[in-house]
Length: 237
Length: 339
Image (cartoon, rainbow over all chains, first blue to last red; front, side):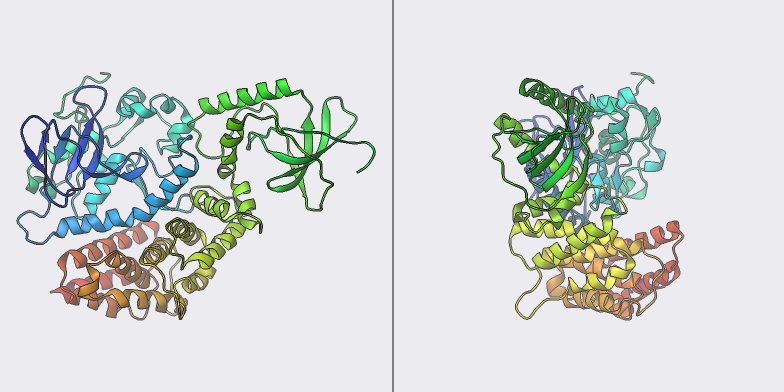
């Protein structure tokens, strides 16, 4: 399958493949990113830090340790890098926005969590009057990048809702802050007790299909797909 | 100075938004209420006048620690920081005339001073003050522009902000300094997303090179990108209403619409954003530009442009905005020309 966990075996990672990072629980995917490997790179459990661009936050370009890889086998059978070119235009477009956010963070000496470019739900928000730059979750950044290549990884209209406990488990870095309604609003969640948040694991499970299936239809995630491999969950597990 | 005015060595003014405002000179005056003083204080933002509560240094330092602690607990609030109302001092008026100088010795811990140095970036009003002041340092001006991008300004503040952002972008658009270019990009995006349609022609002047200076491709991209974003939200536009904007965007796209250029740097992206903006303006060269995109015979590029155009059509339809049918015709033309 086109998604796998890193182990002792050498495998190849290609440009704009999706890297995934485990959270505190074994198998739970807490973060996804785009690998930068214009020349194919060998990865295994001992060598697992490819160059990457990802929404940390902040949006940044730097090597990241990964635990799993998912690939849509971009530009299948083609001699021209069509899909990768399209994704590259999108990533490059975000460059100056990224630089601005980087400059803001530097001015604050990273004392304050100034995540103006970050959102949890919806997975991405287009520029507007108040914040004139794209905002993404880590999964949203990957989803939007692939949409530029006409690959719709997840059907965001059919994402299962999750409650606050699961949300905190999915975002351990924000767990304490997510208890505050104001924080949830800042991150796009708003009011309510359940939200259809696109979790990082859904992206990996979407990619764990054949290249044809990936391009043919968007993945509809289910409870347990936040893990890779997926684990069916009891409602309040 | 009047007889009942008491100069002091230092004063700390705790404020809901600003945590603490450093003062260089201060004049305090009793107003007949025990523990309450009127003050005129020279701050980094000029002379401020208001009411203050009187307390000793030890109590003041305790309050500062309490505020810092409260602030650290409230890290989730990233914008318009509002922590506990430990002490609130309202600045009511600004006093511009010169005041007699009184030396001030700060008793604040250096780390607290350092921590507070950049707190003003979380206040839209203080950002505006920095942008409008003639004595703001270049570094603070850049900082103000950067943070303005992610700050919400109210209706009264917006016109002032737009004037400042336009001036900053215009003054610095040819800069080759990376830090300045990043700030110019921020200024352009914020300006474009908030400008009224009556400013579209002014915006077009930012695209004009001079006899000696040309815009960097990064700035060109921001200019094309931001106006594209803005035009998606614009009211229905008619050809010829914004002739300079239309002509300059068409010229920008046309310059890079060549096979040998489109694969270089960020030119593909500039062209996509510029042509979509021309299409949204119903510009006279829209069809020519679409035909040229198709004539390049670069599939990934024309596919990407086609999808972006389709996305714009979808958004305009969802907004109930007019002109989607014209865009659909262009979309069809692109496909017909590509066959």
